[in-house]
Image (cartoon, rainbow, N blue to C red; front, side, top):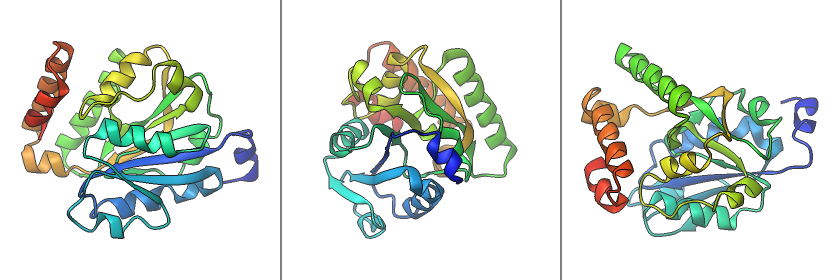
Length: 228
């Protein structure tokens, strides 16, 4: 990344927060993908929810925090420990495209950003799901957590902070950010393992059902059992 691009970021600093739970297979790739942005990054914080695999042995130089499992709570803990002016919230099975630093270098403290969604599968079903996600983001302004989220600490505090939810924290956050979300010109490629395990059509249907239940007022703790 050029010095000019870095200077466009001003005097702001970036903290990357990654919640994990049994993410040993994907975390190294996630961490490697953010290295092009090293000049922007003040710290990388991995917040583990009690992994039973080798996740904690694969965190590299990241700061590690241990909390009870629950993505919203894990993210809250990571944000509380972070010192950057901007936060990049990223799932452990997501890898950013090499141009992501340029995409965030002109970050706006009043607007949150998310990346274009892609799955790491060559199947046409993956392309179909990507188009559906793009449509959802364009019409509903509703990106999910596997698209990453760049947000200033100031804006996050203005909208009430990170929701302490075991699931749907990304939906709750996007809802609070309505009108203050935009896509960033870079890609977040996420593991297709859940689709391969649960079914390419069954998994999106389950996600939609979970979303419908959430907006109908069903507690996220109950939805979590359905989500799997």
